[in-house]
Each structure stands twice: as structure tokens, then as C-alpha cells.
Image (cartoon, protein in one colour):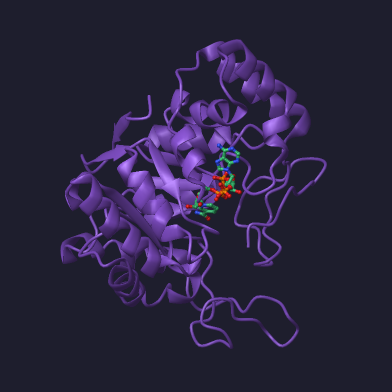
Length: 315
Ligand SMILES: NC(=O)c1ccc[n+]([C@@H]2O[C@H](COP(=O)([O-])OP(=O)(O)OC[C@H]3O[C@@H](n4cnc5c(N)ncnc54)[C@H](OP(=O)(O)O)[C@@H]3O)[C@@H](O)[C@H]2O)c1
């Protein structure tokens, strides 16, 4: 199952399991990426804002050399940061330079939230009152039109979005001449976001699940419903959490800088519809039920549900 591949709406293939690199510290991430490639990973998920693309690039180079595979055998994604929405190609060029690559396989708009490109910080500008310095003169739809120009440059093979709700996708599709190849969203049994998954499927947009293990310090490993499926199949809770997405036809991005976990995370298995239904049920009582991003001070269109609980803030 670890070698499952999907076909994007561009016709290109994308491996279902990818290595995440958010919060992978410099000093660790080169070795992690190289190890992952040597152990069979063919998909690396990066972003300009993770501040580690230099080392990720060194890890890619090392991994390709040591495993003897070619650049074209690897699928690399990176993402446009919010302060660069009006300077798309500039941000892409910075990522390519850091990564040491001539092209990425997928370039995503990280968030549909333009931030002030001339603010008091290059990545996280703030207003004097401490709130995020958003760029209200620019819209995510203008950003998408800029992204649409990139495939002809040869620097990206496909373009997509991240953190898009159905509402924002509908806005984007109403003006788009290129349908996004992917939508990368938070996804795990506390937040299955089935309505977005179904919407994307109906439009030919592949969903990529981020924070599938619930991110650092997650309670998902101890969750009873996850433990039950793990016991049934005699695998770890981690294997169930990653396999859940592949069973639903999603890409899954798992981050680790620990060699043994990088290897363990390739032990994805085939779950059946009963397992998936059991995992889906967890969100009925334990799910994150409100998707507002207080760091941005804006709701990017995710539905609010009654209790308004926020499990964590992504930024
Ligand atoms: N588009 C976006 O806005 C967005 C947002 C968040 C994430 N992402 C992407 O998705 C990737 C994955 O999400 P994430 O980093 O939030 O979290 P995650 O992959 O759900 O969880 C990572 C955490 O789980 C630990 N871990 C990994 N494998 C494990 C295992 N087998 N057993 C126990 N613990 C394990 C890692 O520790 P060690 O590293 O110490 O082993 C780390 O603390 C990111 O790295 C990034 O590439 C994208």
C-alpha cells in the first residue's frame, strides 16, 4: 500500500504517501529526507514558510545519490507563502533556489489569505495592535490567476491550493481557467472534512491530508476507536491513522525526523469500509468542530458547528 500512486488531473502521477517537513528542524531534516528517500519515499512535502528548504534540498540531493534514483522519480511539492501572493514567481524562485531544483511537481497556494508584502516582517507581518497584517487590496482569486501562469515557465508541473473550504473553492472555480490539481487540508479522524473531500472528488481535485497523526503531541494515538481498528489488524495506531486516508483515496503526508518512525510510517495497510466507517464515527463525539484561524483573524469559509471547539491553531 505504501507505493500506491494516484493520477492528478494533469495526467501526472503522485505517490499516495509523502514525507512532511513542517517543524523538521535544521540539523535534522537533511538526514530525515535522505533517509526517507533511501527507504522508499518518493514524495516530499515542503513549504517556503517552513524555513528549512535549504536543508530539505540537501536531503533530496543526498537521498537521490545514495538511492540511485533520478529527480524525475521523486514528487516534490512546495507552497506559496501569504506575503508573496502578489509576487508568486519571486517566491517560487526562492524555493527552487533553496531546494536546489529546477522544477517542483506541485506548487500550492498555502492559504487563501494574502498578507501585507511590505509589512513589519517578511513572513508574519503584524499591525501595531498585534493582529495579522492582511493585504485587503489583493484577493486569493488574483493569486490563482498568477499561479495559472506558472506551468508554462517549466518551473512547476502542476498547481493547487491548500486550506481551501468548499466556499473558497467555489469562488476559485468560478474564475479559474485551470482546475487545481490538489487541495491540501488538515485531515484525521477528529476532522474528516468529508464535505470538502466529496466536493473535491466531484471536481477532479485530489485531496491531500495533512497532520494525519494529529501533529505533535496528538491524542489520536490513544483514541479508543483508533486503538480498536489497530488491534483488529494487529498494527500500530500510527499505521491506522495513515492507512485511513489511503482507504479514502487521499494523499497522506506524515512528518517525522526519527529514522525508525520514517520507516514505520511506510507500513500502511488496506483498511475496509467498516474500518473507515468506525474511524469516521470518532469525529461525531470528539471532532474539532470549528475551523477558524485566530492567527489570521479571518474565517476562510470552513463551517462552524455548534460547540465551537478549536483543538489547535495551525499558525
Ligand atoms: N498545508 C498546510 O497548511 C499544512 C499544515 C500542517 C502540515 N502540513 C504538511 O503535512 C505534514 C504532516 O503534518 P504535521 O507535521 O502537522 O503532523 P503529523 O505528521 O500528523 O505528526 C507529526 C508528529 O508525529 C510524530 N510521529 C511521526 N511518526 C510517528 C509514529 N510512527 N509514531 C509516533 N509519533 C510519530 C512526529 O515526531 P518526530 O518527527 O519527532 O518523529 C511529529 O511530532 C507537515 O509536515 C507538512 O508537510 C501542511
